[in-house]
Image (cartoon, rainbow, N blue to C red; front, top):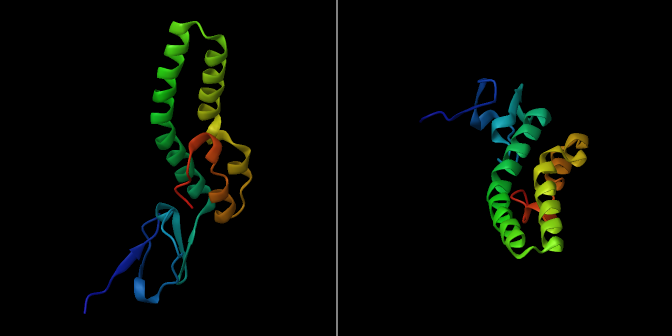
Amino acid sequence: MATTNISDKDGNMINAADATIPSDRHFRNAWTLSGKTITEDLTASKVIFKDKIREVRKPLLDAEDVVYMKALEADDADAKTASVAKKKALRDAPAASAISSADTIAKLKAAWDTSTLGDSPYA
């Protein structure tokens, strides 16, 4: 019978049958091994979370560039202002205080700003 090993972010390995494993794998690359228990390293999880924000916001920023250009062509000051505000919110999303102040994985997942980024991949 084959043994399935699980490794943490530092390359430490444990037999999967002997391990206590987190219920979800959103932050799999932040797992850390302590004895036979695997937990998520919160600092590493925050980096993964911010990278996910950057991935999700790229097409949103691209789409907002089109909106801004149309507003510019139409000389629509209100639309330009709204577009600039939306783009600023998207650029600022990885620096949200809810991310840096999160002290649990649940709070980190709850820090996803659905009003700016849309549906959370962590729901």
